[in-house]
Length: 633
Image (cartoon, rainbow, N blue to C red; front, side, top):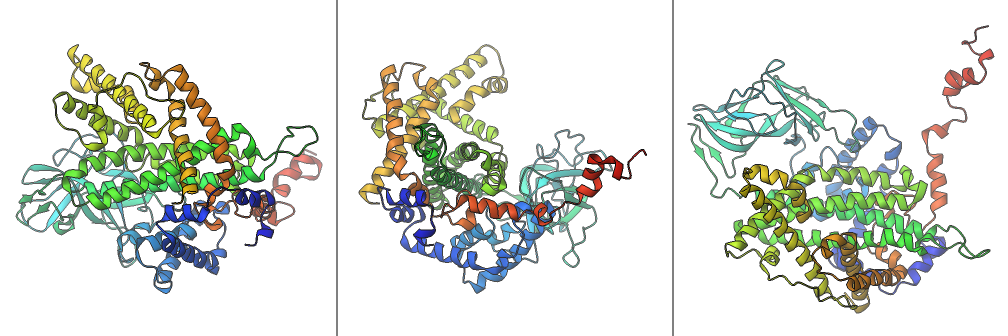
């Protein structure tokens, strides 16, 4: 795109940046070669005429979104070999360009390289809680299925534990089970020879491979319209005494022999790897959502001018207003923080996936980050939307689509409150270990450090002092929560009751070149300082921070706004997100916002006719009853 076609304000923003954008892009995506490959894939995807002929997502009904998703998947499948897409990164880049924020009904197949004649999903979501009689031993809490391995033969039965409505039980909200898949992985408790062996997973066929008809004893369907994810046919599964082959148990680690003998895994934590991987991917998705939202809102804020500050003068860019900077710049800093956190977790997973002893700490770290980052991204996207004014509410902005795609991350793969309580439970265990003199893992070793009564912070606000402030705050809050629990137990409350009464407190405890380096340093400082100021009460509760130090922090934050301001557009440009991925009139690279909004509005189905059909059926009778059939004359 030539510079002549770019909005002059955006062109000036890029011209005045103090660092090389390409250097930062290379840092984010792993080097020049990876950036080059990424851009090649995006270019090919953006030029494919197949995607251009599809109806825009925002003008589609739910059924049309689902149909378009399947059409795209078919085309993607054909394109993989044709375009020589190799490996996860190539496919991820390609899909992000052609299905942005559109989770598809066949996504699992690209990640797992499964043949498309067998389509599958995982049925591990939450049904009702009113579980009644259990017929085959106890039930998996809140899932409602049991499985008995039997004592002979090769068949085993999945029985529901619920005695109501013909003895069947429904699991709901499973992705893709409604209309797409013909197999699913059922999570159930395993019983063999009268003994329960806990939670295991089993492959269950739900539909015929010949004509896609539903198999006997099984009922499936979609759950209806949702807040988002219209491209997904999330559904319910109802089972009535279904039997499946013993070999359909996923037996990589746990096994059941034909005589019913159960062989347990060598290590009970061996399955942590998948959980760590999935949650580390959620951290990356949170980064993508917040980064794209920052691109849209900051570019638009550089283009939009409003309100004279000097009578008769030029209206300033709204990005020049300190209130806009106060809302957007900390989110930009958070987006970079999420990137580095996600990158760290991916590296940690790769390095530690074969080390069983590290999986607990990796699991806890990803559990906490999953909850924190999905909350941060969800709330951040909403702030970005508000910062775009009324246009932010329009699908034309691209922000509503991003929002409804990131908000579910607060629920799937573990509801965030539950995730934070898991982290809190682990922190309580670490505190107890510290009291007993045990050595703590590196990332929670601060709990065992001798606390400093006062912060070392001065007007220079070094990173070491900022980190110490966060360590002090976390250690103090953990100790306070642990003491409250112990006090409740000593007063006679059972341990589980003491935990419940302390849960709110516990949630709070869990929750390139030199120029490029200087800009990133400012972004990092802003993230740290803003985090302290937003939670100030927890840092000053015991006098760790003084009034003067708080003044240093507040003054530094506004100075950092001035440092980041000339680089704000360049910092979002460094994310290198093409327009086809953003799908935003407000966040376009060329800044031609208002022409794009006009073109978008003209495409609306209601604008394809000069007079809408409702004029004849409803409006004309209302406005002129004398000429309508509804007239009393």
